[in-house]
Length: 284
Picture 1: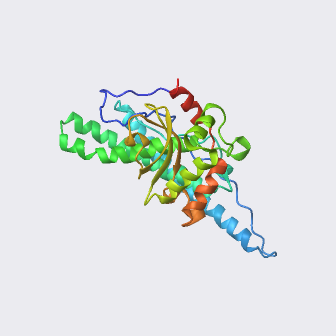
Picture 2: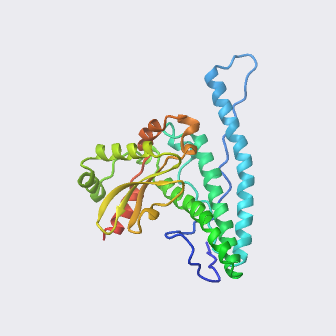
Picture 3: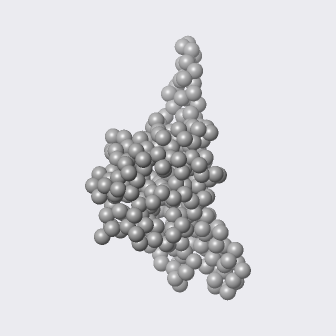
């Protein structure tokens, strides 16, 4: 797809941002099973029906949100601005169950990530206008919105690539050079997972826990970042390989306040293909 380049190169963009394909309308939801009047419906079935109704209602609202985001992106593109869009997921919303529910995945992807993309594009448009007016205070004021929403887009784009259904390799430990590096730098696979889970559980408030590569020392590190800060804010030499979202919106509907349980189960759908490709590229 054609990418619209900016009229001038802005020095304020966060690093490592790549434009993705424009958002497609959300996937259609399965039709609801009709209720019968003569046979009592068990409580478990009622909860399942209620969940489907919730997803259907969400789908309607999220389709409208996606249309608005696409319209805004088209308007910005007509002015020659770089715009970013919500990437498609390479799997269905329910494909990661039971580790992550379909309801959480749909909300997380179509509502939260879409919000970061929309607000990031809006902030960049405002930045363009502020630069054109030589309005230095406005440029400075916009930096927090660019960092937060741009970081949210970066982090979630990596997160979706770090996940896969079990039947497509999710949950399998990494092999090859990345697997050997984990053993060398952390002692064992089990010790690495324990460290990631402990760091993620101990993170106060919202944020991310990362496996990163320190390019300068060619060493793997575990780091946490607050809010939507990308890993690069912890060091210019750090490259994200695996990122786990520990914001409550990533797990609360399913796990409530049991964040350690979420961190334990997320490894069942972690996919190492993307991380291994990045590791191999950066270690050349």
